Image (cartoon, rainbow over all chains, first blue to last red; front, side, top):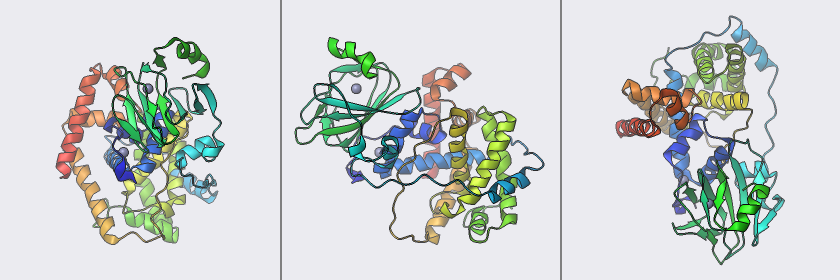
Length: 216
Length: 181
Ligand SMILES: [Zn+2]
Ligand SMILES: [Zn+2]
């Protein structure tokens, strides 16, 4: 499945995920892509290895308190917090998204944003936002530009814009220089995960008026 | 006994914790890794007392999750790093960290000895290559991993243009890739 993915994450994003410096919404995007893409997962693991080497050879260490080992053994004796339950699988949403949605694709609470397009905002920290988008087969997301970085990953169906066609697992990376109007394939409704670190800029009046209300 | 063992340093310690709840093995791991994890947390912005407490939690997690450690996929240092990093995100940012879906490899097969040796040797190789990097490039990678700083924030801190930061990091990664060939 994953060898069909053509559009991948950048090294900067993969390294940021490993170093732990990305906003939560971007971590969610990376974790979701890695769930579908073996190539990027291997890359991310090599960035973790780099982190491990940095830890081994850190320029200076800091002594622990005298009773630290005993205190830790006491913590260990105290037992372990239970892991979060794993949710049943879903053909559309990989595990990290199922956690944020609280279930499978049928549990997504869609809100209409006009022209048949629907969205569901996911609960992440405010530094960046994450949403699921539903674009009916053959429909378009209104023409827009970007003030920051926007990553869009296809979960179901496919969409096309002036850059290329994007199918399940593919990530489109848009920035200040790109204006686009993604159009869903006619054969299936398209569901995407989109994350942005700045609001989008819509070119037509109506989406611009709606924007503050829709939190796009 | 920090030497390069054929199947990877510290791997045997974790396996002893897993199979026999071996406290002396844990104590040795603790003495090696806890001061490094504490330094990592302080460099990332924790106070010393936060870092002390958090490091103890990280080391306790290592004990409790020893059964999940797979030496054919990570070195012990890498594994400790990922636990410490996740705890840092939790502690300093009060955020959860989404993790990729677990891969299902079929029936719980014991990892192959050949895979373990290969992974552990590659890691030792990368560690050597990293030590051989020019200081300026190494410093930037350390800032990226230990400073909790994005490339943009590193640019603001160091006064270097963002483009310079990005190209130096890219250069460092290219060198590492080259050394790994
Ligand atoms: Zn990929
Ligand atoms: Zn866009």
